[in-house]
Amino acid sequence: MRLFYNLRVRFAQCERGQNEVARLAGIAPSTMTNRMTGRQPFNAWEMDAIAGVLDIPREEYGKYFFLPRNLVPKPGGKA
Image 1 (tube, rainbow, N blue to C red):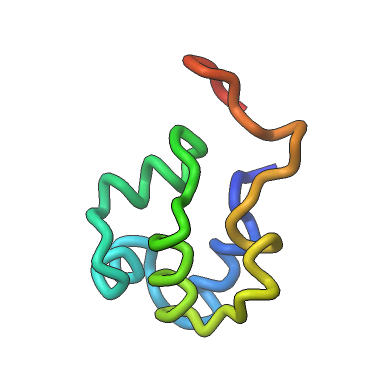
Image 2 (cartoon, rainbow, N blue to C red):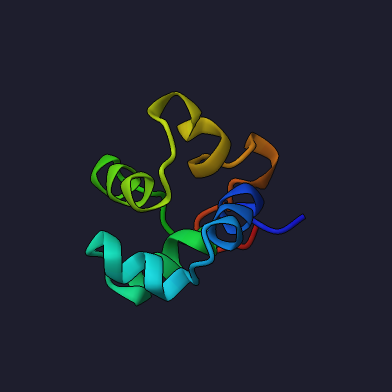
């Protein structure tokens, strides 16, 4: 399973690439990559900014921005 699958699908539905969403949300592409690969979690500001670009309602943040417990990477490891 790919990390943040639902968010990736939303990119496609909105016809936007990851770097374009990052730019429109005011997030550095490298920061977005760190979030999408599970190296660092999304913070509240980033979730709000990305949700604004992709028209994601706040009540659906869990579906897009949080990993299931079994996929949360361990420090220094991979998911």
